[in-house]
Image 1 (cartoon, rainbow, N blue to C red):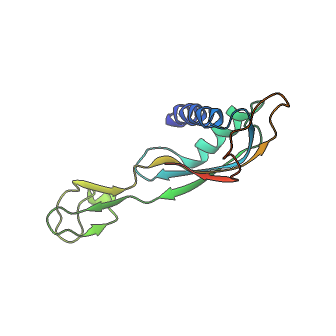
Image 2 (cartoon, one colour):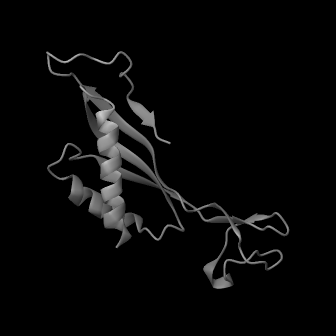
Image 3 (tube, rainbow, N blue to C red):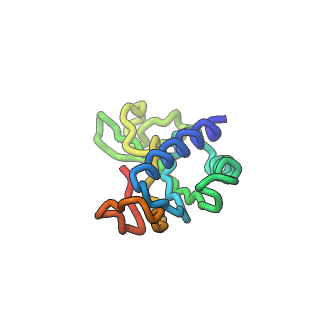
Length: 138
């Protein structure tokens, strides 16, 4: 079950992201995640493990929104870009050459986070540039 491991990694990444906003506390409403079709990750299972993992944490109530990324290959012989099919052995439909280059479909990354920042404790100092409500992630 890759989804449990992916959720752990996602929670670690979100914890690091949270530290960047200290001393303010982000309240996350939605984490937008790109999941490639060739990752062997089941989106419904990933949402299920996310919801179980965030209960009682600082991310409680945060929704995981998954954007599927299709598998695309590029043929090194004819340079065509195509959607490989498993039943065709992932071969190029134009020349039947085996897929050697994946253009997309292996992504598993945070695209963005929707959040609001709570005020810091009265004795903490504020960073000067922490006013965004959505942050794109690399």
